[in-house]
Length: 141
Image 1 (cartoon, rainbow, N blue to C red):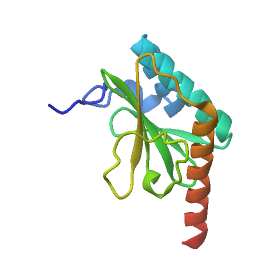
Image 2: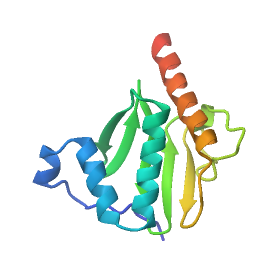
Image 3: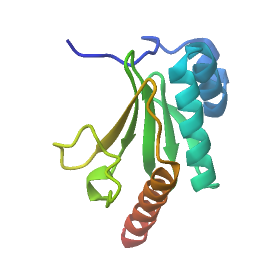
Image 4: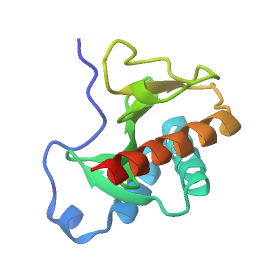
């Protein structure tokens, strides 16, 4: 069975008129459980790691953080909050945060389950490395 993200299947008129940040606020509030708290914590870490980050809302309900390209997404499932790094396979991960989507050539993910904590220092370093990679790739093109 494929686990699908917790999101509505169609884009509502209300979504069309709200900013991505407002939609992410609403997602965090509507979860009202450990997943909302964790998504909010991850968001705070991302924003602190990169004050220039831009929040977007894609694929009918997925929070996305960008700076010169996608840094990562924040998906919520029944059992995990998943941070997927768009270019994760190209990032050094000395603290071995990546624990999902390890078989692909591009993306890598961090699955966080209820009760687990995140190494904020290591995650901050990973976010900054992703931004640096995006900026380097942009300069080459």
